[in-house]
Image (tube, rainbow, N blue to C red; front, side, top):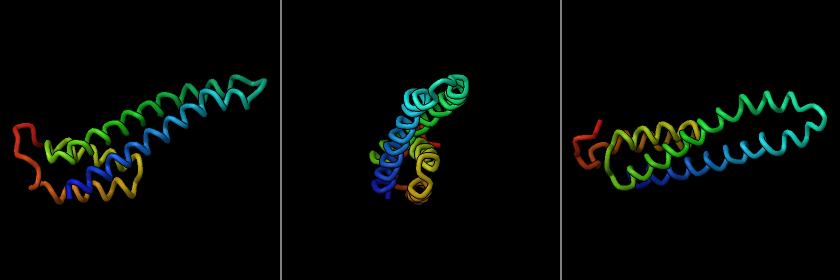
Length: 115
């Protein structure tokens, strides 16, 4: 189960990074070009959207890291955090990853870092 959870988390994280990267490009390059004369509205949208998109990329990267730990069956807490973050990247995949990581806690190596 950790193998499937790790793969699902990594796929969800990669999709999240790609989605937010494309949105970042759209907000910074395409939106101002479409606005033409009015540059005020795109500037306001970019001021709000860029920090949100950067936070989304950070969450997606956490998902990838958690998936890597799930694949290696190490640090169950980080694998669970990554699968929970996967819910924000892709809800169906994230829910599946959370369930699989939660059910497979006993398969993870026991370490002092485990939550």
